[in-house]
Length: 145
Image (cartoon, rainbow, N blue to C red; front, side, top):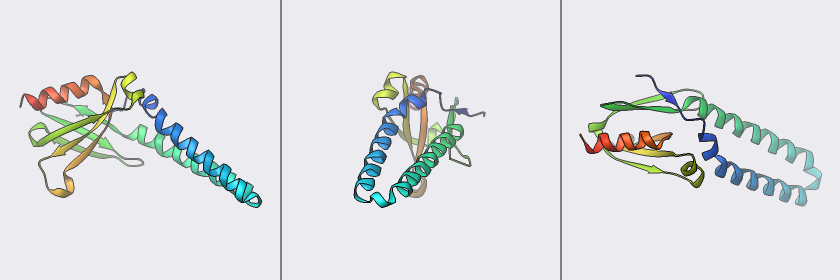
């Protein structure tokens, strides 16, 4: 079963968290420079390094994560620099939760969690952003099992 990356519109869904991240980062940097002006260069360098690292992590997650909705099972791929693939039969799923932020709703994406009939350690699997059509397909296959 071939897994598919997250849709390109995922970047739009990530706008809200990215804006919050940038606001808090800039506010923290400005406060730090205000109270510690002698460390201005170090603070700016730290902010730049941290920002670049976060952008690389988001890019790595986008390139790695994905999913596939099959007839009798689904595959969920997560990871940053490595891939973790979880194949789940619909009969082993207890329930699924989907969520959206306002930007994801506009581009018709949703992410979710699959709650399994399994041991406590492996009870929940994160679903990266998928199209609402795939979410409806999962719902129909769960209800028709």
